[in-house]
Length: 244
Image 1: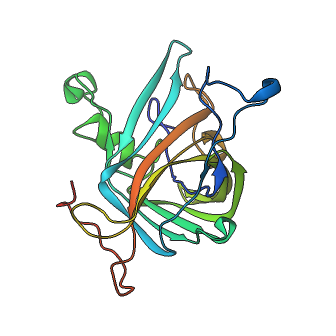
Image 2: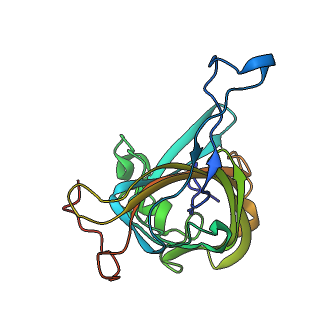
């Protein structure tokens, strides 16, 4: 089950969702005649089709889980990679694959873990959470993956992505709610198209073989990231730490 409060993944992300859809007027915006909402310009993906790679310097994957019904415990995953095959003209044909390093957990644990847990076989709480078979099981299953099987355009810059989540050696379908954040035809430093999405959903962690205990049976996950598109000439974009 998740490490004292964890759960992850996936992945998310993740991600893709939607293209050309009409944006709703912000709350309080004036309406057209007769109380009808004023027309707004359509929001559409204008970046080119192709393979987009996640820029890890501008991405986050985190989870939260109920801890004894008292608080919601949060943590994040530090190492993740994703490939988005984007079809702006037909968003439903787009696909995404996310790969997460299971033991790359960052909880910000503030105490001396060895001192408070003298019988643990791990030096840190993050290491136990990420590698123990009680939690993320990264020692035996080092990767958590999410591979999309269906992309649905919902509207207003939103969509749903369903995919197969493989976690702790078990594969089950998961659906994420996705929101389009923004796009640029040319990254100001890298010279390639860039697009951003966020995704969130809920995973039933006990379905993946985790224990039932003081932690909640489900975990919420959240992903937000930028994807770098094809270089001029059609070559795939390769994210680098230099992208700021």
